Image (cartoon, rainbow, N blue to C red; front, side):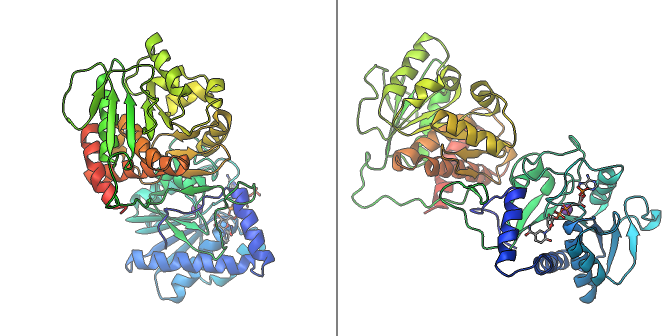
Length: 478
Ligand SMILES: NC(=O)C1=CN([C@@H]2O[C@H](COP(=O)(O)OP(=O)(O)OC[C@H]3O[C@@H](n4cnc5c(N)ncnc54)[C@H](OP(=O)(O)O)[C@@H]3O)[C@@H](O)[C@H]2O)[C@@H](O)CC1
Ligand SMILES: [K+]
C-alpha cells in the first residue's frame, strides 16, 4: 500500500488505456486481477486482525477482484464469506469466481438476518465500470453493512461513485462511507474530489505494475493530473538577503484585515521582504513595511510577486488598482474582490505569471458552472484565462493553461473559516516570488504549505494561527 501524494490521477478511460497498454506488453486481465485481489487480501488480512470478513462481489471485474481476495484470504485460513450481486459477467471475473470454493450468499436481499452483518466488510461490487445509479436496495444495504462494520474497505472505489467526477451517481447520501479505499493501479478523480473523497475514507494505492508516469504535456490517454506532493524548499544561502529571499507586495483596500493576513502569511511562508500598500496606520507585526498606494507602486523591479484582492473592495478605486496590477510586469496573485472585477480578455494580454485563486462562488462568477469534474473545470478556466487557476475548496485543483493540473489531498475541514483564503494568497505569492517562472509549481507548493499548516494546528483555529503555523509547515519541506 502506498501513500497518495505525488501520484498520477487517471479517468476511467485513461485507466482502460493503461490496462490495454499493459496487456499489449504481455500482461493479461487475469494476471492484473490476481495481483489486485491478492493485494486487497493482504491489506484486509493485516487490518482485520482475525475478524470475519464479508466480501461483496459485483458482476464485473471489480467483483472479480473481490473473488480473488476472498479465495486468497480463505487459503490463508482467514474467516471469510462471499455475497454476490448476480453472476460474474466477464471472462476474468468468471475465472476469479471459480477460485472461490465456498458458498455464495445473495446480496442485497438474500443475506440472512442473523448473519447479515460482519465486522469487516469489503465492497467489491462496482469500480470504474459503474455506468448508472445503484439499483434497488444496493446502496442502502451497503450503507447499513458499512456503518455496522468495525472496518469497511472499498476495492478500487466505493460502489456508487462516478469515477471521473467523484459525484454520487444516485444523488447525495446514496453511497456508503468507508474507512479505507484501496485504489487499484492508480488514483482516479473520485479518490480526490468531493464528495467521493469523503466516501473513500483513507485512500491507499495498490501498485499493479502498470508503469504509469505523469506526462509533461497533456494527451488524452495518459494522465495530465497528479496529486500535490510535499514541495522541496531551499534554505536561504549564506549570501541570501531580504530581496533575494523574495519580495512580496500586497495591495490593500478598505478591509485592511484581509490584506494584513496575506502579508503576514507571505512573511511566514519565507519571503524576505513584505510590503503592504495601505492607507492604514502602522501596527504589528512591524516587519511588514507599510507604504501608501501610488500608481507606480508596482514598478519596483525587486518585487517578486504582488497580491491583489484580499479586502480590496469593488469600487472604482479598486478597479484602478487592479488595472495598475494587470499592467505591471510583476508576477501576480489575484484573489477575492479582484476576481469579481476581472476582465478575462484584459487578463489574457498579461505576459507575466498570473495566479487566480477563486473559491467556488468566485469561480462560477468568472467562468460559469461548466460541465464535468472540478479538475476539468479548472483546466478549462486556465485555458480560457491564460493564467494558473487555483480552484479552492476541500479538494483544491491547480491547473495551468496547457492542461497540466495538481489536486490537493488531505485538506483539513477546519480550514472552513474566514481569512484562510487571504493566508493562501500570501503563501502562494511568496512561492511565486521564489519561482517566478514556474507558477503552477509555486501555487501547488503554496496549497501544500497551507494544508500542512492546518494539519499542524490539529483542530479549531483562526486565520492568524494558520499564518503563524506556516514556518512549521515550511520546516517539513527543507
Ligand atoms: N484497470 C485495471 O488495470 C484493472 C482493473 N481491475 C478492476 O476492474 C474494475 C473495472 O471493471 P469493469 O469495467 O468490469 O467494471 P465494474 O466496476 O466491475 O462494473 C461493471 C459491471 O457492472 C454493471 N453495472 C454498471 N452499473 C451498474 C448498476 N448501476 N447496476 C447494476 N449493474 C451495473 C455493468 O453492466 P452493464 O453496464 O454492462 O450493464 C458491468 O457488468 C476496476 O474498478 C478494478 O476493480 C482489476 O481487476 C485489474 C486491473
Ligand atoms: K468497489
